[in-house]
Length: 448
Ligand SMILES: [Zn+2]
Image (tube, rainbow, N blue to C red; front, side):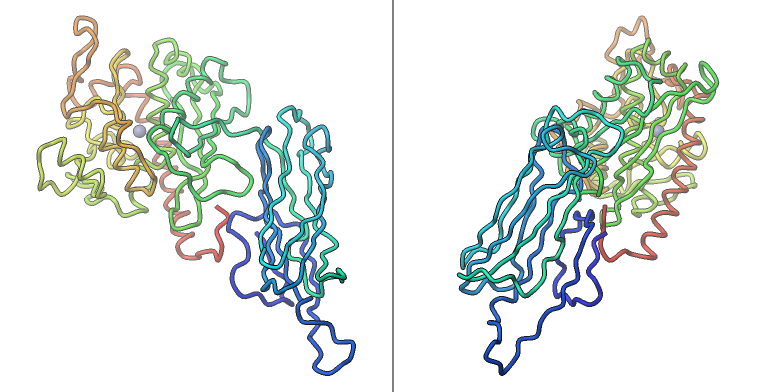
């Protein structure tokens, strides 16, 4: 977080919430203008200058810094020198050495500095950081040193891999990070494909988060746990923005390697990853915290968010429905956090996976749920879906519809999915605790 030394009093908030990498703020005393003195400095040499910029930049893109005169510019020209400085990064290897002088004429108050981060910047052990430093701020024709202060004389920026491009028309970026080699290249591609699909549906950029480029980063791995079946793994959001959205900016997905192999070979991994990624993005995991559910734990839990409810009323031809039916079976982690399997069957976000080859569509109702959570969404990217829709694959090979609640869970069996869901339940409890803490002690500025 940026901090202004206590000796300086500032009026409005000076820094965008996203600027958190301030490393050097030099307190400079403001000289009070003297009332009577032949040598009194003109008031116009009092000037406050701020520098803001990104704490991270993706390889192959430009880091853009903004220099502002915060005091009324007056009639004098102001100049400020700037230069980049190596820290863990090296000019010419990781980024382009950049320096110069910004000249603000009488009416100008904002200038920008661009520093290219090289696409060829190599992976290295120490963080590839560089600084942009301001110096030699001067004012007037004779260019006397500014008798004021420079806030944020230095910004430190780290060069990181660029976030993958979202779907066309979308600004929502998901990074899936693989901390080890437990997932094969082909399996990683399935995670990437699933992330891309969600960026077709969630299209709006969220408040930036210190230290990352994407709107959400998901750690994905597949350690060996207990072989085929049994424990499948766990998935959920782990870190949340502290702004009003409270939306997650980090999450994790961990699957038993044997189960991942089974699902990959059966061709069903993508739907399971899509489903779990939906939970990481907040489906089911944020409902309690955001007050989007009634009757949890009872016989008729209902989801009451406006947009999903509107879509459900249309889907079901029940214009007076008061909520979307939620799952009542399967125990904690399944009930109350999924659409009702008996009503919605093959929809992606019911609590039960379908057999291999059965499509699991993302309905407009699910998309409405994400709008209810606070995301900007695109309904045009919904899959075709009608309530009670059945399989489109050859009925001779696969059941046309789950035989009963849970009966369709042929791939991720009724033993394995609840195990995953139990892990999700504990993640949810943690989520709610974090929400409670965040609401009880709101932070003055949100880094995230
Ligand atoms: Zn689920």
